[in-house]
Image (cartoon, rainbow, N blue to C red; front, side, top):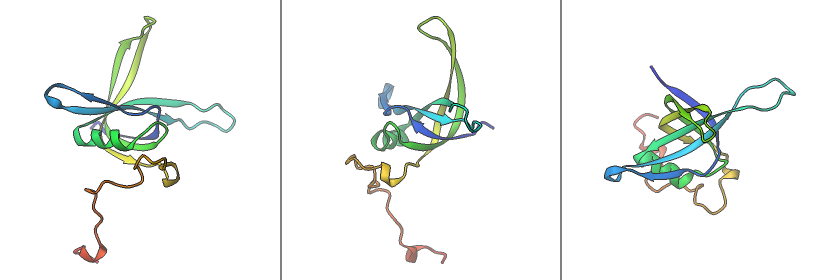
Length: 131
């Protein structure tokens, strides 16, 4: 089974891509800090995340550089040759679920992030079949 969960910060704003047949995705990179001993320099791992269709649209609309996210999905490693001719590798996570984790104090700025979309209706406790 291939299931990965990461929690980290976006290194840049998500990039929207439109592919054949109007299939859309949002691509962004998440930096995940490693645990280090006290006094050691901070290190991070970088994951390229691809969110497809509606999930990608929500990421595009509500995420920005620096925001903290939790991403769940499947991971793949890709090998490639960099512009300098050196062999490199990257980890790509295909998102199945993205949680927006940034505290409300970091979500302002007038971008509408702190107001959830209307389709995310809140359910009144009185409507629940179990109480």
